[in-house]
Image 1 (cartoon, rainbow, N blue to C red):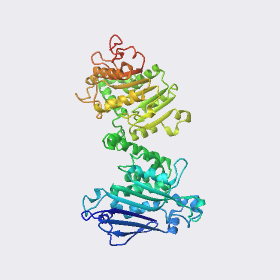
Image 2 (tube, one colour):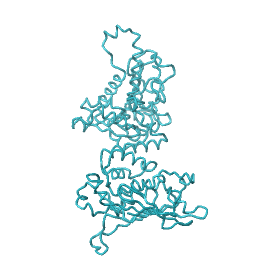
Image 3 (spheres, one colour):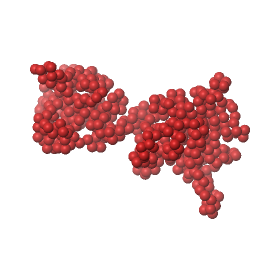
Image 4 (cartoon, helix red, strand yellow):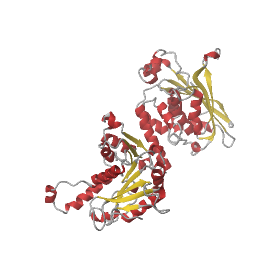
Length: 540
């Protein structure tokens, strides 16, 4: 199989810089051993104005069969029928992708120690692949269309033509092979090589070796900086991983996380920080906040005496009281379809599943690790089919509109809003109240005024390290009223947990309802009930 890479240049920036980028001298023919044959690198032309590097991979079909027996494409039934007569020595497939990584490993990393900065320069590139296999599937289009779909969004000008089965007999039609020529006026060579490493196996839809779990890491490493934003990332991932659905799902979750992190200009670790892999403890999610609140509760309760603790039944924790208050609010609205936004490790979802009135439950979280923990907590893999059909766990960011959130009777934001930077809060408000627009929304958040009752919490500190803010009752009431007025909801503010005459309850809950009473409110205002007032309600 054969591939060529060409570039142009000038006397000041000669095209032969290609040799420095590939770490292969233009004046030599070099040979490299690979697992299934030998690779040869040579330069058909090398001058200041034009330079072409060629990679010729001489595949040993016998070695391919012996080393690949029972693995990947070599173990497939169609291959078994023609083990020694096949397209592997001639068509640019995963074999060529592996050869690229073997021969041009340093070039793919974008490293050029001999000429610092050269690897980052953009230059004209032209890549020619005389025969590329394209394994089609129903609904995925023909070979030419597939090549365009995969390469054009990356900025390549694509010239692809189908190769006939036999030019002597045109009636036989076209083969599954295409001649592919890619051109770019300004591109990094390292990016081009990484894209070829991923997209050649994706076009073929098969590999000559067994696709193990570490292929996900290889895919994400080679796709860094371009795959997460590719409009066909799902198709590429599925075909690169040879349609192994478990690996595909894992890769798509990590790609979505990378896309969200890039959109927020944050590191992936900052976004996916719900579970600490090293300690097994929860991080900045509602589970961790529950644990810390429980510790504060224990410190406050300790002053009542150990003897009383031994005789009295254990009161429900604040987390349990919060979930009970949320369930009561949902039942009050008559909701059947409920979205738990920022579901964390699934504590509320477990409670929702116990009540058959909630027939459709969606759990959404930005953290892949939190969703995995939720699946384990809920024993999703062993859940009865009827129960499992009521539940979906999906990855998503609540600061972006999402079609999957539309059509629900109610949405819950349980201990979520305080984890957002305040400038990001309007984006969440629009995504939930403006775009998704459920009939009811339940929001809970800490009451900052109550923090003084927890002696174990230092003055001025938030209840959890990841909280970006905590509001007192007046601040929360003001925010809820403004959101309700902006989006046509009414809102009822309720306390959750033990009431303190001076500072209120530790948690505050807002139940938003769409429409009811909003039409009767004065322009620019809405009916806002505050159940914490002595009168039991106040219209603002």
